Length: 511
Image (cartoon, rainbow, N blue to C red; front, side):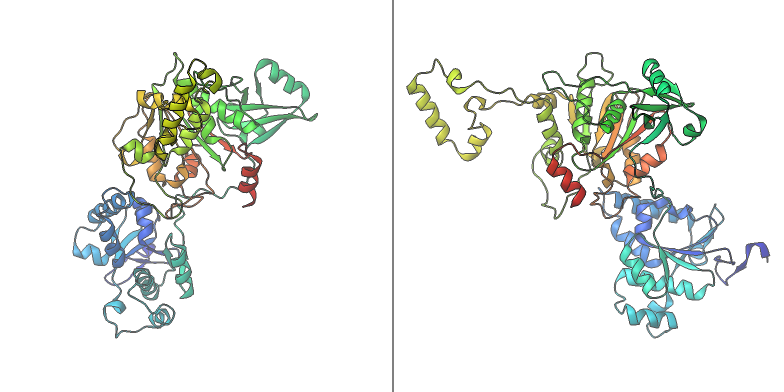
């Protein structure tokens, strides 16, 4: 027997050495990342048969990411475990580890006992629950094989129950970004007053090598002199920082001008308006201007006659806050409207309806009799009609809002993420809101739909997550930022200062 490979247990390929661990996978790990099977290096990997049962019940979910991932796991396991012998004895993986499927004999024969199972039954007596059965299988592996056994699960409650019965348990950390110890939204680079003056006059400056090593390409910084003078800039690589290239304001035709109201919004506007940046991630709490500024810059560029974009596409994941109210009736646009109402609000702000004329001037040539007849007709309308006709402003009955013409013409489109697979989105300014609700795989699916000439911005707040399958370090938004950081066509901005209202800022910080 090859001593370098360690002792092999009878009828099993599980390796027994001092340096090897045995990881038992929960169902949610495989659903989160079907490729996780290949991410445990040269350690032993064990899948309880109860996991296969759970995957079987989920694979029929045709329109969900969970269903697709369950089917992917089945295909991977079918390739790796082609027959009964490989299923029971296990197989070696390309990375040097082993893969086995375990059936716990203590669950098959209730009369059998072991110290570990007696401890489990004392703490978790209900073995009809799949979570408890998976923990029982992990305890059986721990009892049978000497290497340290670790249950890997994304369910915090299962982690706690496993530790309660003496079993090590941890989260799946492969696709989690490192904890961010730097809370600042941008870095500051010290310069002398003369260097800062030179930067202001020339528009760029070469910083020292020590400062440059701390920066990644397209990172936004603030240049500061000892006298307290500051100037925002962007790092372009090769130790060079350049001045931001932003106009005084942006606006859509017929709309109102939108200006950056703080330093971080200047960073965001620069990235939104730069055609060399094809992908932008933006973190920001409620009220920091993510939605309004991204929509304003998108319309500013799209509606320009020399624009490279044919239109704006807007989408967000359909994940409710609180209890779901059920299916929504109507067309796709009507179904998506409640989810994208923040963008309708933003469009209403950017391109407001023209105020009607004052009633005394609008009806100057209308006789008293006609005015009395019109007012009585408005009063007799049903409440929905009166609301649609804007009873407070008599002259706006049936008026189409300016931004609705953008929707009807196709310049602004509403995209449903569930139908985006297989698409090729060309020459569009694509805004993906609430991207923190998506898994890394879902974000990858969306970004790989972006064709030449398009731009995508992913915005969201990593602190506000309603999706039970991701957290602040494993969601698609932060994962995408972490993996794309430093690429020449990608940029990132963090917004921290709220601009919606004093009340909204206090609520975001204190509640």
